[in-house]
Amino acid sequence: RANARYILPVANAYAQKLIQSGLKKEKVLVVPCIVDLEQFYRKPDPSIKSKLNFNKQTTIGIYVGKFGGLYFDKEAFDIFAEAKKIFADFLLIILTPEDRSDVSFKLKSVGFLEDEYLVLKVAHHEVPDYLSVADFAFATYKPSKSKRFLSPIKVGEYWACGLPVLLTSGIGDDAEIINQTNLGATFSESRNSVHESLEKIKEQLKDEDVRIQNRALAEKYRNSEILRDAYKKILLSLRSE
Image (cartoon, rainbow, N blue to C red; front, side, top):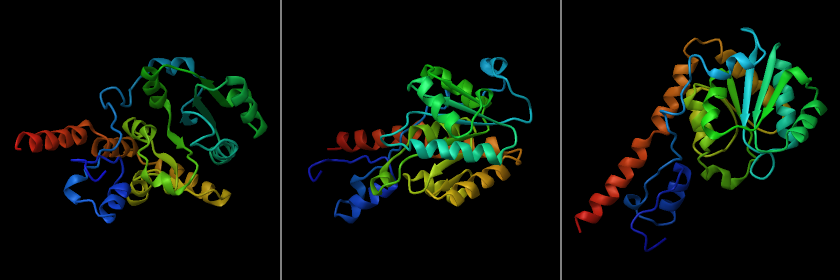
């Protein structure tokens, strides 16, 4: 670290930690995990829409990823169940590489019926189609001190498709961004916190500009120009030597 020309952390929280440890501020360039904004955007008429059984009153929540490890497992399903209570007509979409029967069993164990969820394994390029029919998204990370230094790619992809995100408190810079902008909501592990955060998202979904506002977060915090500017600074610095 001491001999590096530059260090590129993915979160401001870790950048500050590096600077406080004695690293020169000029050597630290924050580059979050960027999103391809031309691939991830809210499609007005995604091809999969006709395959899904829902009506205009249905609220669709979506989760993309695995369970366990970095993420909640049992707790995530309890959170999904809480969303089912809050939204009168709720459909849950889970895109995961995990075994469908195992995920379905866990959903049924918290009260989901067969027609209230969809569990699929899809290619990465298909994910925007499913995000485009959703109303909000779940990002259920296990909390820990080190999670402050993450830059979850799924949060950026959710934002890019205009989705408010329900995110665990203390995750990367994203949790602070969500709290400051009041777009999406963060939660702690208590049931009351999850309930209040989902109610907050329910209220946000009444805003007709909610898609534009969340897309703007991706454009500001996860665009490729951030990476391009960092590389440009490094190359210009090396060229001038």
